[in-house]
Length: 579
Image (cartoon, rainbow, N blue to C red; front, side, top):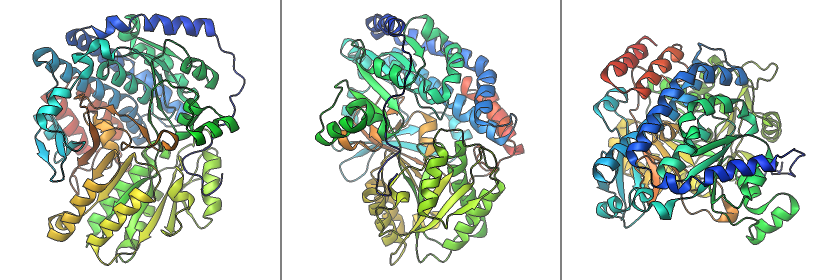
């Protein structure tokens, strides 16, 4: 891997694999035969199916969780298993519930009802508030809001008129989608299925990634209501199975969650011929492809006068962003952008590393992690390596002092996809000019456009100069999911915001992808989603890697996600207080 290569590891030739084309053809054609029927099912019928899916998922959750923890080397009943339950099962149930709410609205009034308000940004855009929706969400997620930013020129009447296209024009939206699932997070394939089925009106063939194909039996049980009705089929296999499915004449569109190199292999093919086709933008396949891909997701730390408590909390916050799923997330921050002259820069970075030292390292379960790790450490042999290294475990690693002028540095151009992040300090005269420079740097130098977080002390947000710079920076950031004082990963988890790359990447320079998932209100013409949270939350968020009672809290949260009520919400709060 060269230091100037952008993105992820290159795709190579397809290995030998036995493909049962007769059976795959039968599966695809059986699902495709249901496309028209599905397109005309009522919202009430879809809502009933989703309710059954939630019930089946909750019943299957213990076995699903046990398999995932065994595969990733995580002990049950720990903080790590609580995290896995939340991301692997809970976010799928959350998405199903969000779609149930929208389907109820569609049945009653013909469109999903976002909570609002719709707010002009002052630059020709408007934002649509999509979270919180209910008083219970306000209780559980105090101080947290999420807005979808719309493309310039859209008004609220136009937004409402364009909602839920698959329900306004079922015949124009129908078709058969191939979902190529990701191998890292257990909920990604099932969530992508819901986006295509419920959000876009397509029947679906889901191919599991070989890395987590062990989950297929659990997915089949959880989504049995959709499978039994014929609207979904789940298959597994390697690259040759994927290639056969991509070329099947009954597949109308493809959605992939993975790396930009996987997208290139689908669109242009692999090897030297694929590289030539990409250079000429002469695709091997013309089937429409949507994709949620990787990114060197930045965290922009606005300099300020932080207390010891501020430093400790935000160190835990950023440490959680890195350690979640052992760093095997497309949204894991890979560069922390700081102000070179910030007096507390060293204290913050030291607190981050001290926090990482308290978090147990984990097995590097994802293929190729060791090679990726080595490429970064070879380029930066002075990297700080923290924690136990034994067997398959890799250390938490922080590469400090990446030079902003070294725009070809691996840390700024390649998604590490392992337990590693970096820090890059920018020169600026003051906090406001730092924000402007950091946004420019994130947009123009850092590779990808999937997600980013901005951390800014509330006093500075109230400052007329710094606060204005931060608000303008949020507006100017070309990232699909943005967190302000809250990990951008929550944009993905909530399901009512959109999740995907910032629009506009060329097909032969796809970077973080094209299209969105989530988007439970079925909005058209979206640009990005922004989630805002409190500077310090008490009790600390249950998803923090430093929480010791996480598994108990996440079990309570799953009960709430499956059946939102005051009783289940109080159970979550009670468990969180004891955490």
